Image (cartoon, rainbow, N blue to C red; front, side, top):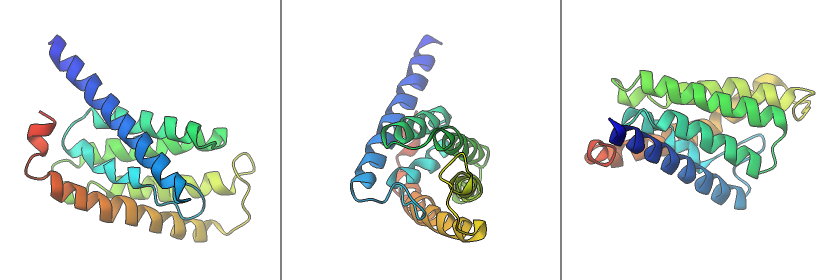
Amino acid sequence: MKNKKVLFLTQAAMIAALYVVLTLTANLFGLASGVIQIRLSEMLAVLPVFTPAAVPGLFIGCLLSNLLTGCCILDIVMGSLATLLGAFGAWLLRGWKWASPVPTIVANAIIVPWVLTSPYGYGLTDAWWYLVATVGAGEIISCGILGTALLFALQKYGRRIFA
C-alpha cells in the first residue's frame, strides 16, 4: 500500500515539474501568456487518461507556472482551478480517450477570458466572446492537437509508463 502512495506522489511531482518546464519554455517564446495562449504544457492535459496522479500534478504544475511567470493573483487561483477542472474532467472521460482534451479546452475557454476582462484580473477591455475565441483557439492547438498527438504517442506504452 505504501508503494502505491509513493508512486502516486512521484508521478504527480514529475507531471507538475514537466508542466512547469514546458510552460517556461513556451514563455521564452512569448506563447504561454496573453490573449492567445499556446502553452505547450497544456498538451499534458490528456495524462489523466493514464494515471489519476496527473490531476493534482497538472494543478500544481499550473499553479507553480502561474506563480513563476508573474501572473496576477486572480489568474494564479482561477487559471489553476481551470486546469484542475479540466484534468478532473479528462480523468472522468478516460474511457473515451479521444474526448479527454475537451474539458480542459472548455474550462480554460470560459474561465481565462473572465480573468482577462475582470478588473481584479488584467482588466482587458476586449469583448468577452473575442477572448473566448482566442483563448479557445490556443487551447485547441495546445491541448486538442498537441495533446491528441501525445495521446497517440503514449497509446502503446502509456499503461506501462504509468503502471
